[in-house]
Length: 105
Image 1: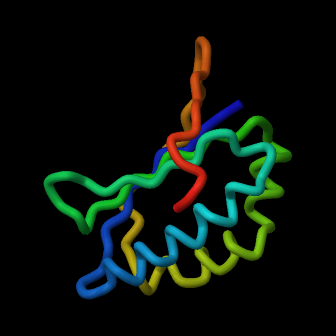
Image 2: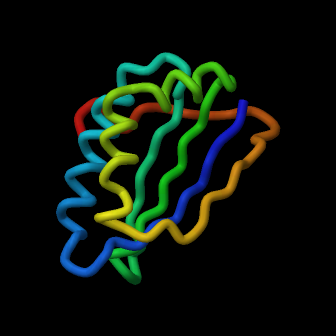
């Protein structure tokens, strides 16, 4: 099990387009078995700052996720919509608690 924490900044005038792309990505990922946590955030101080936290059950689940049409579309447009500021691979420890807040995006 591992996760990624990614920090991006929307390019000027691209916040809404980035938000729309994020929502499409989240909706598609709801169907993926090996991705128990997939949360996108915006910063309270700066709404153009986005943080993504995605948890994968295995390397295979991550590779399958990367092959999805939604992921490929997101990768294809992210450079136009945002600057990727940082991406860190994280290794969770202890008990992982995850409960759905909502099934709609």
